[in-house]
Length: 141
Image (cartoon, rainbow, N blue to C red):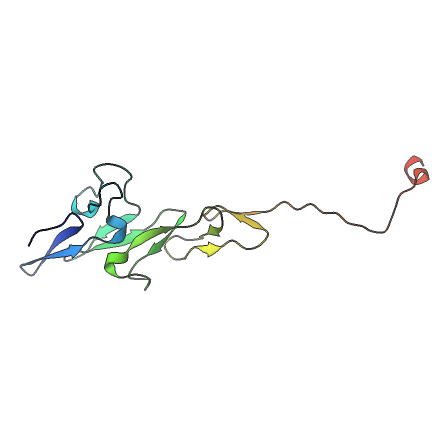
């Protein structure tokens, strides 16, 4: 059979099999599978995200994802082999504490999130009315 640009050949027990490239291993620029190359690099454009490891029969496992993303993989029960990828968190409304263990979370009210593990408190303007109105004699004395 003919191998498409999105497939890779795996060998095991004397049998060669074509398998789909995991979602996170596909080069955005041309749709080829970066995991087909030893260096795991795309020929042009942006590179694939995450650290990938080759397992026994040539299948690849997504080992870790960078800050600002959440790992979707088989071990976490989140994805089939072909669906492994580093899911980017929304840089305006989400955060993720540990990219390899946690999913992207909605930013809690009163906080500012940037898609990473950093969360900031929104500065508040406090306007208290304590019922005290200073008079000119209070200020001058």
